[in-house]
Length: 145
Image (cartoon, rainbow, N blue to C red):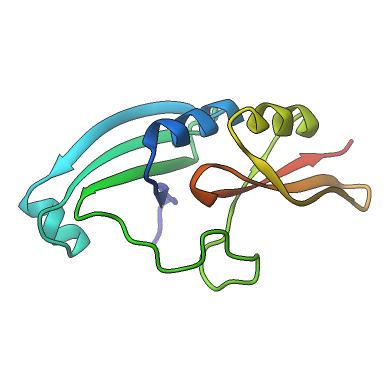
């Protein structure tokens, strides 16, 4: 049985930019390290792995995102740079926020752009998708009273 979801991995080329983006969103840097060696190679099914890892967590401590830069072997891209929402695979991570317009404005200082528009869904939520560094898409949801 599953006990919890531990984290979501995002492979990036610029760990510092990705950390800055998620910290601006309100996450906290939990830690950073470099991994390599035979056990890492066996775990990920690649030879000669050397990677930098940073983990950011939500303020409640329950949600984590692992940001990994592969120095060896080099990361590869298998899909378009900015795939549309209907592309198969993981497309986004969603976070609940307060002050969605302020959050979007702060993320724009890190190069983020809206994907689509900021919309209101019925009387329940204000929602938007934001594309950040490396094409990472985060959905933001602000619950309405």
